[in-house]
Length: 460
Ligand SMILES: C[S@@+](CC[C@H](N)C(=O)[O-])C[C@H]1O[C@@H](n2cnc3c(N)ncnc32)[C@H](O)[C@@H]1O
Image 1 (cartoon, rainbow, N blue to C red):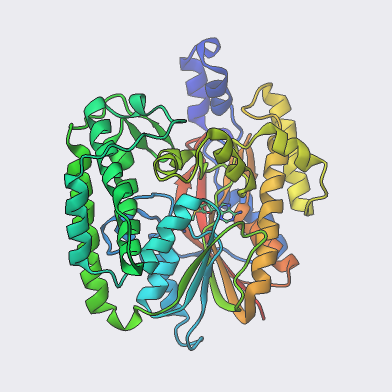
Image 2 (cartoon, rainbow, N blue to C red):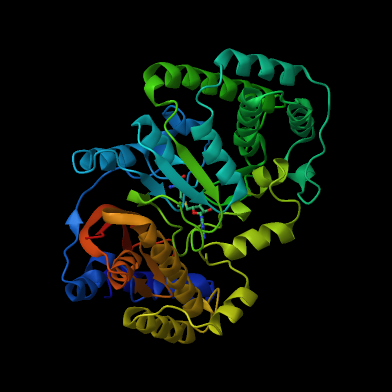
């Protein structure tokens, strides 16, 4: 559809002076379009409707909520969404076992524990696995003990070395770097003598990881990048670390008083690939938010924390972890070449979308990645493998809920939510509900409206 404004823009601008990328955006046939319009034929084929269910599903509100706020990672979803979901099914399942195959920083598991429900998570990034595990595993730690150990850390004079493969001198101002090295030196020096002390050390490390980006010359918005105008005070690490320890110890007191009866509720995060591993007990409710197709790189975005906490010793190691993840659009070309030789899952929608993307890349003449059709294909193959594995873990009568956003790639609408629903059908699940939770703008063609959907599938 062409909008009147589109033509005006062409009149006003000397097209030749525009960058190729901007020119493609202005010329996009998707200007002023919407996913809801483009999704109609897919919905008709599925025999489904999209229910309007506006609600907050992003991580942002978690930054003020107990335990969730221990880690400031914006890619999660909101605790209140998880709470609403658990309440919706409270009467249907006596004591559901909850599972999140993309556990991230542990939002689902923390919230399940606050409701006294046993839970499992799977997470491939060792840093996020550590964070999720610590957020559900340390509720019995004495707040006083944590504060007193933090005092010793703050008083320590031992200097740890910054990660050798990162450019710490550029990422941090010299005074800031000095304080970070002292904090890390103090934590490393602490030798736990029992289980509780080991948990105290984990909480100290989690607090340390959570202040790194705020203390640096970088920002996550949501991708990690330099922030030239950012002002960081010399003592930022000391101040931020003390604040974080205060928050954690306040929350520990709250957990022990408000959720005292749930301290022993099991919550386990498995470290590994959810295409391959699953819990050894059946689950009732899978609540998850998979990586979005043209979304974030869940390894490079966390390289600072991974490096400082020793979860990656080199870029090569980080790349190795990244290659196992559900694919994102800065995946290595080699991985995509080997994928093209494999025999992946496919369906007619995926095939048609691949063809259209290839056509539009050709039409544009240039595009970030010429192998984009295969990247898109790999995304759905990866998701198929995860969903197949997780469906095995689901008890009959159980539900599989995915919070996911759709995409616009090289002027082609990709209804990720509906394709995942269709994959669910292929795996024998029934599409119970498709809810539109919010609208969002496409990163490339800003006037195109995408959405975020809650897909509910049921194993009848
Ligand atoms: C959208 S985030 C989930 C965030 C989570 N809901 C939260 O609130 O923190 C997706 C997560 O999936 C993880 N991931 C990607 N591929 C994976 C795989 N194959 N197996 C397990 N985890 C994976 C990423 O590391 C990332 O943490």
